[in-house]
Length: 276
Image (cartoon, rainbow, N blue to C red; front, side):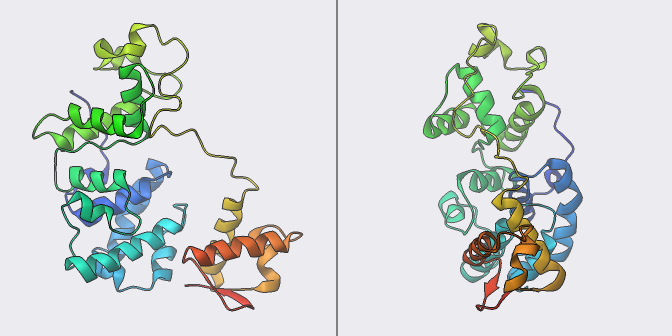
């Protein structure tokens, strides 16, 4: 499959740590935002050892603006394990990668494909959409992964996966697919029937169903509390509601604070919420 690859900075790297950082940043975060932050993060934490040797609070600080701060904690935990068990170098083995904190099936395969150039397929929401439409029906996780793996040409894992990601992101889009520009249209079952509803991608493995409303959500409150800790390191119990944006609902704010503690994003001593 011939494709024009997007010129993204992490695509010029084969450093497994740099690739891992980009993949964790890209999870549910806009590409444009990650482009601005990826190099900055690596300047501060260029290796697993540099990350593992730093307080987790500093990693969380550097993650500001990227959303889902728990990913920063997972990245720090991953770095600690990589240093302790793998001599500071990410392993080039699927099972070993999946055993690392915060590394799921997609991220492990992405590191293998994009850092080690292995012939394994990555299946994110964009690739999952392409697979389902070409096949003409929703796919289970196992079927989607097997189909994706079978498509990878020998020795071309890096380029093929980048092409598939770009195809789903820019051509086989969720709402208005550009079938005339798609190199897979002659094999696409959904294209052959004229894109009639239902879209095979709906409900298929890896295809995102969309996020719930952010405004007023617990996610928004979590983000506000983490930002408050970044700004002043300590939030006292009587200020939790105000810091979370719910001055009239301190019980909700305390419940959200408890989730931050459970996720390693904060500490609680019964009186104050502090940085980890």
